[in-house]
Image 1 (cartoon, rainbow, N blue to C red):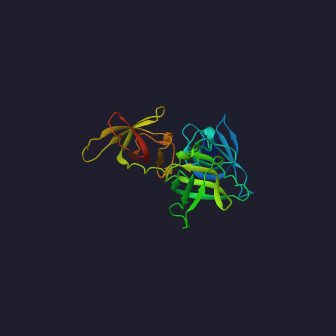
Image 2: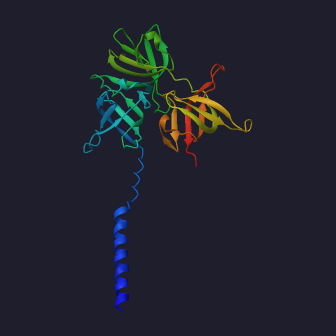
Image 3: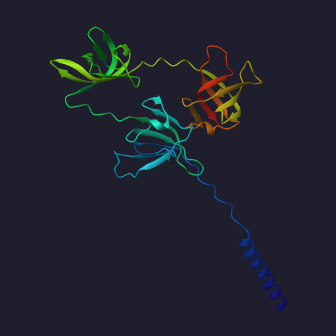
Length: 299
């Protein structure tokens, strides 16, 4: 009996020591980092650091909210007042909407940035008119504005343009002769001796309708990040084995992957993609500009 108790004690000691050794030598697998979720920031630019591409936003409608920042790089698409713009066009005081996609290091990197110059308050007694130019009287130097499509109905308004009127067309100083019927127009006018006279006129050419897109569907087989190009193996009824098409992207290209707006660097070889592009008038190049890229990760 004593020998049996001794054996049992020895076995218990061995099991105990084995457990200690196991716990001392075994390491747990690291917990994978949480997936960074894209988000949107809307506010007013309060600080810009050109050296690092950093931008800080404040939120005037939410005074209790702390300022938040993000970064832009050479793949960030930037629009200023509806036009493609460089980073240098952004200014403190601009309204800004940024689509943020954090990097794996949790750096808030903007995929798209849309900024607008804040409107300048008109001088006392002035009225702001916005609409479409529907008539121009070159002899009388007058312009007639009508409401834009979708706006509440109102009578057209005619005003004079004189030598003191400041005229801008597509963001550039312009002459009265540069204005055209169909232009979008914003004018600050004052009434003098019963006649409306423009202090300044900001006009923009009517945008032509975008050309129809042709679509190609297939698998991405090659990506060249430096050249911003990729090769799509297009398969269809005419080409069951696939034919390679070379595409390039620019700042106007809209890219989504798995339903989320991304940059060109987020596309992967093996992704299935639907690419919308405009057929060139002549087949003078093997590269096609991608206007829209809808990609899905390979299963």
